[in-house]
Length: 341
Image (cartoon, rainbow, N blue to C red; front, side, top):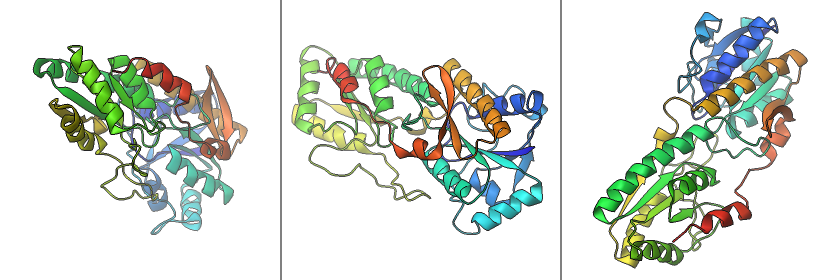
């Protein structure tokens, strides 16, 4: 069986480990052959492939990014569509696909599977927001990168007696903010799941400052202050019609300074959370998911995604994978809030 692998959407640490795991298991055990689509769905639509043999994936599990490239191409727009993709797969002799991606990628994979194509999915998002899996690879690395940055922000904040605001990724969930903020000893953590007033934020900042601390505020990019309805977005929509978030930290910094009189600076960590080498945890998880994806193809589990439940790799339907956004529960936020102020 000949299998095409693609990585689509935002990149994250661990993608190469998935590719390596799938190819190694497929070639050595399952009798499979692999090619890679370049730049996600773009490669599928434009019939742009590269070979993926043993030599092509040697030593890549420790590399960040993706050797296949990625994009946010919508496979149903422009020259795309089910007929075009089906014809390209037939022309290349590709029997099935492994789609590695997040919500947008898997939604496209489900639509194509419903149209009769043979696709299995691997969950990829630093945001850790897919409800059908306990953790996604890339999340652990993103949290560690954020913590390292916050540790540095705290030293410069302490030198100048400033309040430092660190904005992290996460889209509409606060997992990165919660984990990195707790690990870094933040005095306030702001997440989309929890409405918080600017006045309450100022109170936490003032309390920490009055104890001789340089306050650290961690805010998720999708945080919505209690007097507003939508997350801050200045950069329009992506290819799947979702708002590109970012900039809330820069908005909050002058408000904090105005309400407290404490000099405040904001830093948006942005794409550095996606870059660099994956952590040991993410390398292992990604490798296991890649191997399981190869097995899914062997067993013909089309329209299903591999997922982590506890310490086990399981198979769930695309419907289940896309049905629920995994949000931070109230009890987890309440644990963190004990540390605020």
